[in-house]
Amino acid sequence: MSIPGLQSTGNFSPAGVWSRVRLMDPTLSLRLAILLILLGLANASPHKRDFGHCENVVKKWASSALSLEVKEDKHTLRDLLFFLHVPRTGGRTYFHCLLKKLYPNDLECPRSYDKLRFDPSKQKCRLLVTHDDYSMMSKLPKDRTSVVTILRDPVDRVFSTYEFSVEVAARFLVHPNLTSATKMAGRLRSKTKGFGVSTLDIWPWKYLVPWMREDLFARRDSRRLSGSRNIYSSDPYNMEDIVMPLHKYINDPVAQEIIHNGATFQIAGLTNNSYIPESHEVRHCIMQHKELGEIVLEVAKRRLDNMLYVGLTEDHRESATMFADVVGAQVISQLRGSSSGVQTAATNESEQSSLSDSEPDDEHSQNATLEFEVSMKEISEASKENMTVGKLMESYESCISTLRKTQSLRRISSLKRISPANFTKESRHQVGEAVLQEIKSLNNLDLELYEYAKDIFAQQHRRTTQKSAVTVKEKFTNTITSSYGSSWWNHFFLFLPIILLLVFFILFVNARRRTSKVKI
Image (cartoon, rainbow, N blue to C red):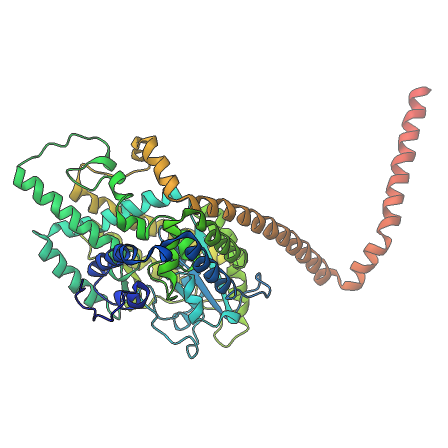
């Protein structure tokens, strides 16, 4: 079988062509990726497909993967901060409302959501935020890089991935047909080139959005041909006439390839966007032999252990506070000691919205976007002086409120195009238990990794609380010392036992006197 765009090299090798697949158009790339998987499984000899071979492949990768780990103090921020952004975990909020307040624009690495855009050996940037998986560390100076990430309950993350895929794809329904929508998408991508990054360029959305866009147009065309206007379901996750039902979505080969156990594969460095050549074979050995997933899970756990910070979407406010204490405080200290100073990052006009989903759909969306941009400028202008952890959290509260309002208005505007389908937290309760259990089964590794992350989060919380208590004590001591002098403070502690004995003696004598009066 010949595959367009790829020259025949004799023996079929999925790993050998995977790097070329990544460079193609996202929709074609995804279809070709699935074809490669099927061809690889069909053409592989029985020996290559057996458990023993796959076990050796996975164990060899695991041994090599763990060699990337740095054994130095994980609690200390190094020169480069790599925010490994697992999709649909709230990472965009962290980027806009925390990280952009800490790092000046000239210290941000060029956007790397779709591909590596800089030479780490030469670039002097300090902040890298990307959906790239952990294999990115093979391109970075690992002894000078700290990694942070956020994890989310896997079931909620699957729901959110489905909803966002449909939401962004629905924005294209303003066009009369798929051809027109595809042309507009091309214009959007060229428009944002050099001015931030479009969602259509970002893994995994560069695969998931075109897939959903094609599906939405096909269903709309079918309704028009049949003349049907009746919707017989009240469950937005099962409105087959309008959008692909959730139960079909989770069982599609695309979801199997990209979504399920996505957090584990991303932290392990084994996504279909990986920089490791053998990742393709390792990932599909795991899909074929589920028990080998435990090896990958252990690698992912060790990597979480060695991260500077691990946050949880479900405890977002507490996670943000801890991020400010654990990461923010060190960034402030680090930059204060450098020539860069600690200034709030003024928002570049070219990156007002670093992740541009598409053009706003209507006046409400335009106003919301404009309000967010103005707010970001105001926050930036208000924080020209040196940053502190307290000021960072004040800025965060203002920023997150505006960002959420903007996202909500865009979501409402987008979902109007597939009405009456409307995704809410309440409507998720309509999804049957069988579908929920299937999602859990398909994401068994992510469920276990999430539980492990919760333990790490609890440990971080205890460590931060203890550190805060020590800091408060030191501040009190310094205040007394600066007010009365160190010699007075030392003398106070020297005579404190004597003072306490005198107070106790006086209280004892008074008590005896009162007792004597009562007897008389």
